[in-house]
Image 1 (cartoon, rainbow, N blue to C red):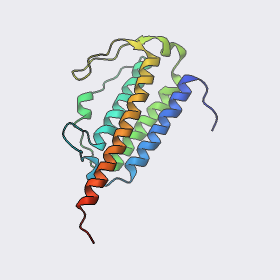
Image 2: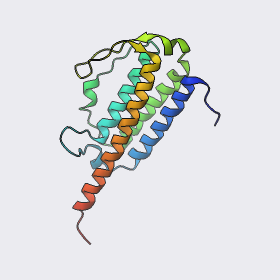
Image 3: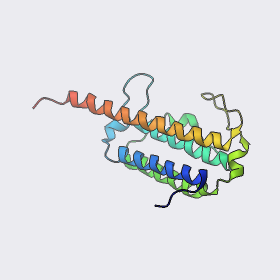
Image 4: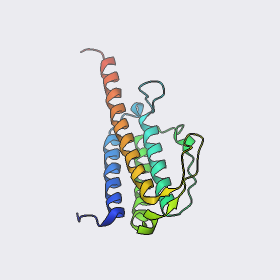
Amino acid sequence: MAEPEGFADTFVLLYRQIHDELRQEVSALDPQALDWVPGPDTSSISTLVVHLLGSENEVLQIVRGLPSDRDRASEFSAQVEDPEDLLSRIDHTDRLLERVGPQITDEDLAILRGVRPTAAVRNRAPRTGLFWLLNSYGHAREHLAQLQLTKQLFDEAHDSEAPDG
């Protein structure tokens, strides 16, 4: 694989790595694990994936000056019962990344763009495209780590429930 040239190519490469890690984490999951939450005020694996991808899609569109119809609130109530559904969503976002990522220009990185405020996220002041992309990547890494921890906690909780042989 050739070294990426410039920020946009590097961003696309790093997000591809996140998508590959998401696929690896999700592909072998028991459907019961998808909606399991470790405790109050925590999110399930399916919620984390749906939210992470929704955020990524929105940021890619905003940075390129494209409209976004993201419904952030629905990401936290989406019912995903099959790992294949999550894999399909990752593939969809991969296609957007492949289409939009290489189109990101130096002007897109420098121009101030606003993200539509929501009830949950009020601080959406205009920022540069570079800010939004870096923020998005950090957000995705945080949720990937949260997903991995949730998966570990699910495994521990269910290993302790298994009868001793």
